[in-house]
Image 1 (cartoon, rainbow, N blue to C red):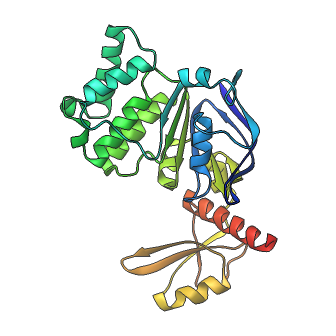
Image 2 (tube, rainbow, N blue to C red):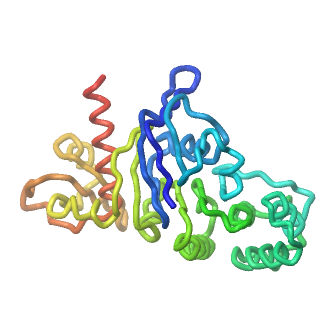
Length: 297
């Protein structure tokens, strides 16, 4: 199974371009879609989920025309949007059973097995009879994950799924996605680099609605080998360093700034070579796209 996106464009009223001639092919397995807030990720996810239409372009899921055969897509789709609402007065068990029926799981025994399996997998079995209105934010997110997996979907889209999850819940969710991703297309849209690094064999980076990179995370990291340099500096030096170097990554270690810069050669003896990570790749592409936009303007 493969998902082929060609020349997708979407402009909202007011002239805001969310997607700009975006083309992408996604194969079976875990696919990470990285980008900052406002990059166009959610617009792309909503379009793939048949919730909104683009201005131009086409999408094919094998032989299904996603834009013109929406009911066929929905039969094989599992979707967890970034903002997921629940009916507050219904229990998790009853709601999941009802949603399973709507997804076409009409056999009562099969439906019961699926619902119980997913409630256990998302660590909600002990809360199955609690009303959804009494769920915490993390519990609601886990319920959203469970409903997205109903009906054994062939295409699963999850938009910022680990937001609001504590570390244990996040690991449980990522392990579940990893299991499912062996036999389906799973698109993980996020701005959290670690989610992609730990899970995905293929990835893309989009900014400003445009595709900046598509390939294997390992290949993306290898492309920066020997070009990333690290230095720990005083806080007062940060601005000056930004002026003189291409700073792609910053963090504080014990209150001291550590910076990574991108350079084909060692800037000076105070910079040490460092093995690049996916964070370096991500921020390098963000900076490149920003500078490209500035040049065009």
